[in-house]
Image 1: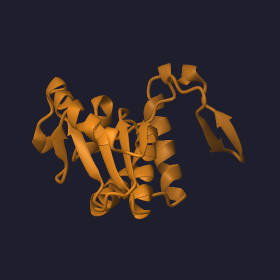
Image 2: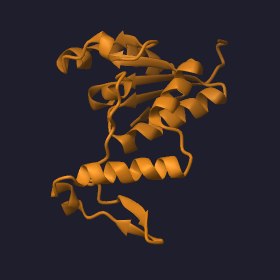
Image 3: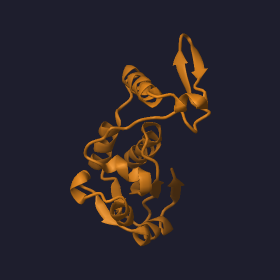
Amino acid sequence: MSDNTKRMSIIVTKGSLDWAYPPFILATTAASMGLDVTLFFTFYGLTLLKKDLDLKVTTLGNPAMEMPMMGMHMQMPNLFGAVPGMDALASTMMKNMIKKKGVASIPELRDIAVEAEVRMIACQMTLDLFEYKREDLIDGIELAGAATYIDVASSSDINLFI
């Protein structure tokens, strides 16, 4: 890597299906454009590095959520999140829409990120806090803390918080 290589870092803090797409799409796109990319997974974002993914989406707390239905976009009322089984229904609908539209899955995007040599760092403190084991996570990642991320961010041209 030359000294004038552009760098991007992203802090990944959310682990739901809808929040998993932005960091992986941005990271893989930036890597394909020649940027040196680092993803730092902390708190609920750390779940995106688990070997066994069971990502869900929720309507609760997401008033902007609209789903294409019956030829229009139907807004999912926040109250729906309180209805038993609604998260499972919303997750199934989202996964079906992703598949129907030919959008890569999160495991596929994650594999592309590994192949593109995106540096993925799992926050050691979060790992300890949530009592995950290293064996729960995919291969090819680093374990490090905030100081490592600060070092990366201080030399990055682009820093994002997702």
